Image (cartoon, rainbow, N blue to C red; front, side, top):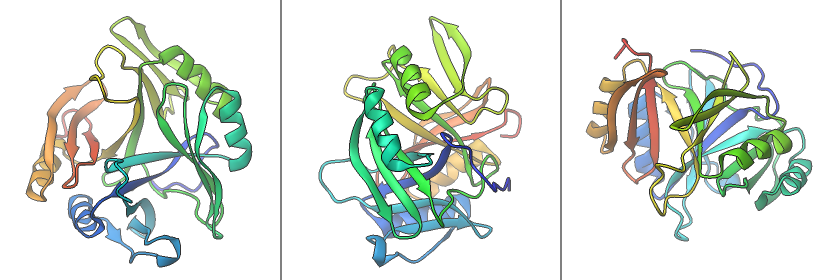
Length: 257
């Protein structure tokens, strides 16, 4: 397990899932990834933390049922959530959930970027974010699919100080990463293939030991496969859906699945 002792400002630092069925969701993800599940924290609305090898990996909270689908969300590390909300607005984004303290754990906010994608912000307190990444059972990659590619690049540079590196600028594949060789997230020009009605959004990838085996396990646990495993230049990837409809991706190195 790759352990994290610190996360750079602007980097993805936490993920959580809004679900319409916390009980079945806990059973699904503990069965799929070998996570452990804390008991719901009633002080924070029944929020549940998933852990692996004693380190926080992800969270889950109830869907209030106001028409928003069950979905995974990504949070970026910020030094000051209030200041970052102002920076988001100055860069052309909008604040959905204003900065709020979460006890002594930290502070959070949710904003939308210039392409309409929602992104969370987390100002660490006692809760520093996920404690592992890049190894089986942990978050492996974070990817924004947007129809407003160039404006979105400028937004993340200006609002979050992203160090942008162009991976590809061909008409059929335009992709930029956060950081260079140590890239931790990417932005894709998805205007040519995002279906009508599907908004710009962040996708969460989980690293697994074997993509095909994990995809089969998803089905065994009551989920489904949206896009079957396929080899890509960046790993063997599948898009899957959990039992309540939340979509995520699983990935392993090519040749290991």
